[in-house]
Length: 300
Image (cartoon, rainbow, N blue to C red; front, side):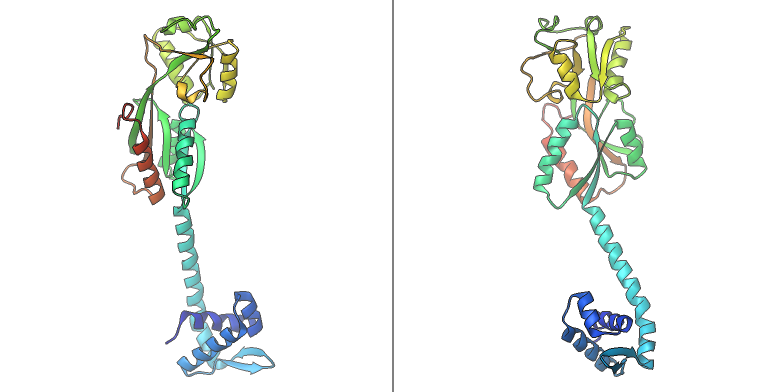
């Protein structure tokens, strides 16, 4: 019976003209190559090579066989490479993570998921929810784990909401507003405010809430870094509006104050192309995220 290894070694010897060169190139022993060539000739009943001073030259029959099997072998190798690439791409999860609010929580989930499923690797990009939507629809990512408003337009997307969170006003305990048990946007508007950067989803949600009550907030700082905002707030120079659990790991020294007259809510969830079968890793990750959603927060 003709075996694939016969064809592989035959083509290699025909190309290199030497058993030694083929053995070294393929990482096998020279006798193994020699035996495979002899088996191939026996199976075909043809002499395929002239042996001259340890050099191998194709016979007329050998040239004919080579012309038949070489293109087929090249096509097979290309197909196998495509299969490898496909399998490799399935083990890399292309995930779009949120900017600002939600980013810390998502990072924690991904770290835990990665420990439980080391067979998957992540290709992560931090983007806003609108950019995430565009990238998912363009096929540039498998899954978006994002933070978005409740009325976020997810046409053509499958949207799964994990939790519904309200934003709170946060100040240092030496801030003039720290004695309040609740606060209105009008009251916040009279004090300095530090927010996540202008143009971000969070900034837009907060400023829109101020617009609804006819107040222009006194924003003295907008930053890409929560650490910078926390430092400004910690010094008592300003307050901020955030999800407290996403602000700093240790809230000692800070006061969380509910906003009473205008709820600023965000949804934490995921979305992907509607009707598209998710890669196995993305499906497992989505199931994992859903299983970890707090029952009191779960809205999906």
